[in-house]
Image 1 (tube, rainbow, N blue to C red):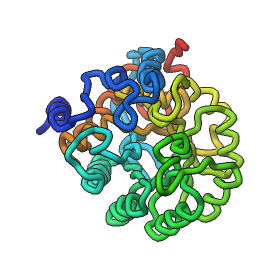
Image 2 (cartoon, rainbow, N blue to C red; image 1 turned 135 degrees about the horizontal axis):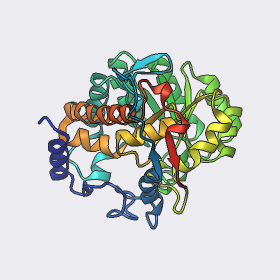
Image 3 (cartoon, one colour; image 1 turned 180 degrees about the horizontal axis):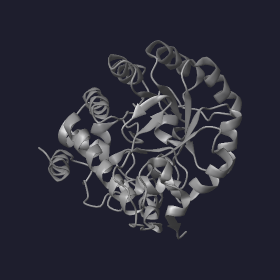
Image 4 (cartoon, rainbow, N blue to C red; image 1 turned 90 degrees about the horizontal axis):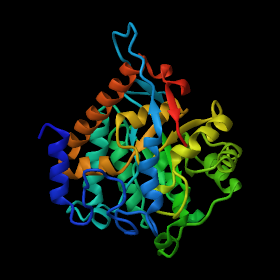
Length: 340
């Protein structure tokens, strides 16, 4: 197995719920949540993918570029390119693949590190659904990012203790998961977090704290007030709210408020190196990719992850070369045209 097409075909054969569509855009799985789709009409998931096509890259091929450098920094940790694996769990439930979450996490973390990147690991209603992924990161010298869901404080505290023992590069909390009905009604319920709640989490951590689920200037300002070290612009893959904007639509206005105060990442519908280029041009420090990397693990394990990351890196380098950019800092807002 040496190509992305082979990995993806294998994933399609193994997934019994997710269709592994040629163009993964949320249309075939509308409303299938729990499952692979977006909430309600599925329009939020569909919009996440489609709006990237409303940003266009300017060509500039009169240049003396001889080398392309995609290296970046993630909280003082060097990465080969600013593309990270988004936190995903429930592989059997959501994809119908015969793979447990432990195996998935091990292959994802291993593959990302071999590709020169990092994985955000998932969380679940039982403590071992957080502890086991955290242990995988610990086995890899802390090279990864633990993700905590916004549980009630007692259960958050247990996870914070684990994080402080594992010492990952950073920890994230996907506060947008507070809108997942199945988690609000689970044996350990999630709970909406105030600025003061988030500030308390930050104060109890010994590693950088990233807030995932920011989708407005107001939310970004609250993250600054909570003293977060970074934010992830995300609508949880369109799985928590129908009829909302995509991340790329709100990125520019959030950048104007946040840039320089904390790291800015974005996820949702990113399907190519061109999309990565567009995100960087509009001010993001990096991107998280979920669905395609899940397919990579299901279809090819850690090698599938490396193959996918190689594909994204090649596409990003091509976009940079064709727009006159030799390094990531050259990818500025004037390199794209926005049509929304």
